[in-house]
Image (cartoon, rainbow over all chains, first blue to last red; front, side):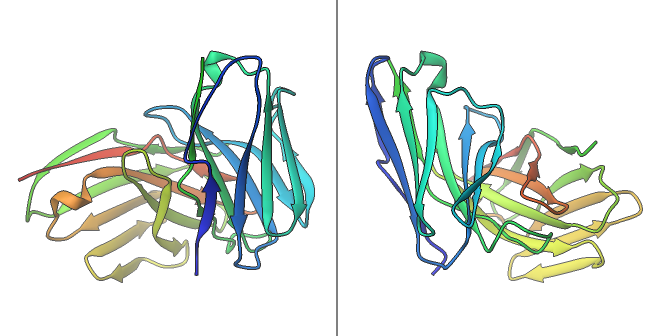
Length: 115
Length: 110
């Protein structure tokens, strides 16, 4: 099983709303990632968790707040987003995030529209 | 610094072979990946190759690596309309980051 599950698949929210994106994997992976992908662009790394600790924050605005409750789950809490935050948000996981043999597996993404 | 470059578009006829090219800049030992992304979907890992290999074949997919020129290619034999997608070349050199190319959009004409 190499499945990374993301919910919801689609989300529409206003600029004053608070919502959360969820990601789950049961591959025993200890590294989990959030990426943002705009149309016709490659994914851009936002956050990396390794062993449930935040390892990388790519200078993401504080209106995006990640959370890793346990090794299988990764959340992205959204608050006061802007229309330019509309994008496909991808979750990925890998063995432990270390070394070149560490392959990332991606979920199908959540397509977010901010009105 | 690390950089991965790809051509943006490729159009082929159904049944022909497709060759998608990629160049990378990091010279340290690395894994190189090909991901496929269909419209509205996430990234699907197609194949990968370690930088001490020259070639890897997996059914209709052949990956060729020229380490001297830092050139990677993905050949899809007998291309089908279902192969229409964006193909991302990516490089992993250690640590948490994967460097993606801009993606090559493959159009397959019936």
